[in-house]
Amino acid sequence: MAYRQFAIFDEQGKYVNAKCYEKIHLIRSKFDLENKIISFKIQDSDRQKNFHLESEKQHLEAWLSNFFGFNVRLQENLITGFPDDTVSPGPTIVSTATLKEVASWYSELNEEHIRRRMRTTIEIDGVPAFWEDRLFSESNNVIPFKVGNLQFIGINPCQRCVVPTRNAVTGKMDCDFQEIFINKRRETLPEWVNKSRFNHYYKLTVNSRLASKKFKNQLIKIGDEVSLM
Image (cartoon, rainbow, N blue to C red; front, side, top):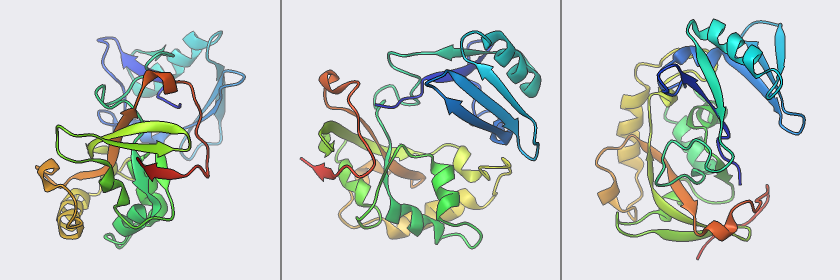
């Protein structure tokens, strides 16, 4: 299973991410985890800087500190990673049709723009828009489902943060994004969705977790079938 293996922290031990620092949108990165190499480039710059994640970690942290304007450090967690939601640390789920539908709410955004803004882990094709809303129920219930042979539990609709309101490349905020989203999500919410999970409508995609620790380190791949259990 994939998880957020690395995270950037400030000197107070707080996350340095796009929720707090819109400037991070300007960083372009490539990972070669087999060789433990990360490459950074700033938007609209041709200069690329490569670092070995172990032997050049101090140089990597110095580059990031210079970019942000304050000291940061890079941490790695191979056990749990660094999930946003520690209760539901599994992948987030969305359908391709949902991304297309949400894109249609905005005159200047397309499917790929929404995909980059939502940053969902697993995308399901061949199902209707908002199919993923079947993966949660009342707050005291969970919905089991499978991706290939791997079993998950659907927990709740994902409450979105400030990041989707921004251009994923420049970090510039779209001031009306959230208002449009909330109104359209309310209008298009399927009748069969459990509305008790929507104290507000700035929610999209579904949070999940593995059904059992025995499934840890197993793999899923593109083309695996997704099914309710």
